[in-house]
Image 1 (tube, rainbow, N blue to C red):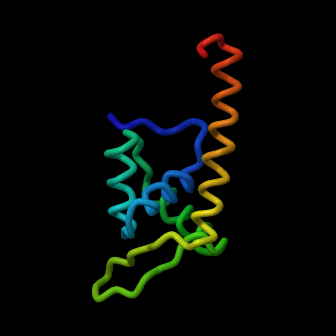
Image 2 (image 1 turned 60 degrees about the vertical axis):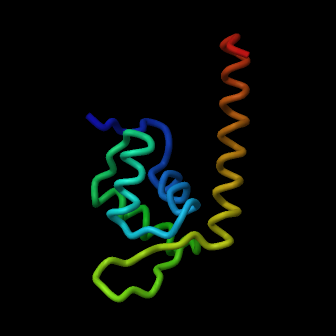
Length: 101
């Protein structure tokens, strides 16, 4: 059974998914579930997609069918890089304090 992430924002998983390649909503949802064993509901997914689009981190691409593919913008790539670096810093300190490194 897929679990929910307690600490990471769904938007981070969406950005990471789009960093690999352009995907439509269902493709993003499948990628996150397959990669992280985390199931995002449609409301959570599309709410986060809407916020990311408004922030300029992702764009909707032209499509021939109903599925709307999204791509990561340059701003989104920079934001994702900052977020991952911040997470690495936090986890590094946490691991040191736990005596695991």
